Length: 342
Image (cartoon, rainbow, N blue to C red):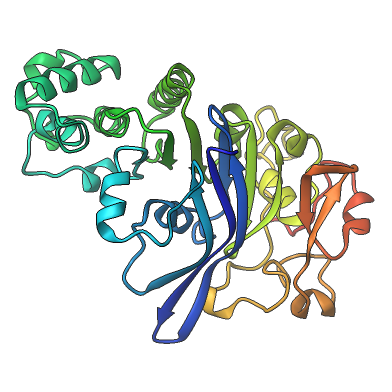
C-alpha cells in the first residue's frame, strides 16, 4: 500500500464568477522514502494541491476525490482530525517563512509547539528537543537564539527554522512548497541538500513544489507537470527529461536560460524562448485541453475534447495528456513548440 495515495482529486473554488475548477482530476501515489515533484507556472494549481493535502484550503473551496494516508481517508476529516494530523504525520514547509512564522513568539517556542501538542512533551523537554532540531538544521549558536524572534534571522535561517518545525514530530510526509524562493543560489542548494539529507535519514515521503525545472531534476525521482489545474505529463524524472512528450513541458524546458549558448553575430546573447500567449484565468479555461490556444499544435478538437493520458514509449509510468501525440513524436527532444521573444 502506498504511503500517500491521491485519486481523482478535484478542488473547486466558489467565486463571484461561479464555480472554478482549480485542480482537476489529479492522481498519484507516493511510497515511503519516495520523492515527487510538482512543477508548472504560477497559478497552475501546485500550491492549492498542497493545501488540499493538508486540509488548509480557503473557505470558498470544496474537494472531491480521494486522499489516503496509510489507507486512512483524509478529505472527510473534521477540523479536530486535521489538527491531530497536521504537524504530526504530515508537515509542510511554506513558501514564505516570514509570513508563516508568528512574529510575536520566539522561535524556540514555535519549534517546541508541535512537540508539546502532538508528543505531550513538557516545556523543558520540548525546549531541549527544539534546540537539538535547530542545531541539526544549522542555526548558528542555537542555544543563545532560542529567545530571538523571526525578524532577527536572515531569509535562509528562517527557512531552516521552518524545516525544524516541520520535522519536529518526524512526519511520514513532508510537503515543501517553493522552499528556496527569494534565496540566493548558494543558500538554495544548502536548503535543498538539507531537506534531501533529512528525508533520506528519516525515510519520509517528499512532495517538492517548484517552478524551477533544474531544482526538480536534481531532487526528485518522480514528477508531475501541471497546467491549468491539470497534470499534463507525469513520469520518472530521468525518463521525462530524456523524452518530454507534452508541448507545455517542452516549452518550459526551452524557456530556461542556457549556459554557454552561442552569441548572435552582433555579440548579443540570443533571446530567451517563450511560450506563446498568456496563462488564462481558471474561470476562462477551455473545456478541452487547458493548454489549447497557447500550443502551436492546437486543432479545433483540442479546445472541446479533454485529452486522456497517453502512455509514452510503451511505458505505463510515463504518460502525457495530448490529442496529437503523433505530432510531438515527430519532433526531436529539443524541438520547439512555442514562439520566441524578440
